[in-house]
Image (cartoon, rainbow, N blue to C red; front, side, top):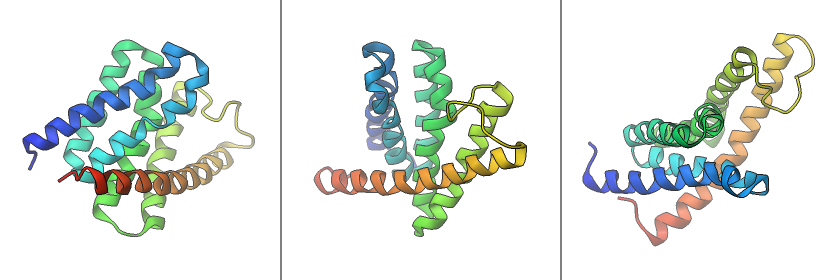
Length: 167
């Protein structure tokens, strides 16, 4: 059930996520690392309540897209899925490896859409090898990235939960 507290937390975290994603467009590429942090608010929302997390992910993507289409697409296909998948799977599962594996698969599928359908190389340059090798590279990268990000996101979640309980 979605209560008023979840809605208020969601609004605050959605705004924070959008601001973090849009920082590089306003203040220059030096703030590109801030856009990576835009997954954290979506992770927190999804970990508290997956339904609120999904709504937050969609609204954040639309909000960012209204300001900058490129950043909106980037969020919808990279940072957003990472935050939502990690938070959602963390809500349901306890194994960090399983959470990272499943989230890595979600991120790989999302990156494949951007890389192979939209045509934007996600890791900078074109990936070497045939299609299967390229997907394998994306999969290994995604799982490793999700595992490291999960450790970081959990640290922030626990830190905040101790000081400002979410529920």
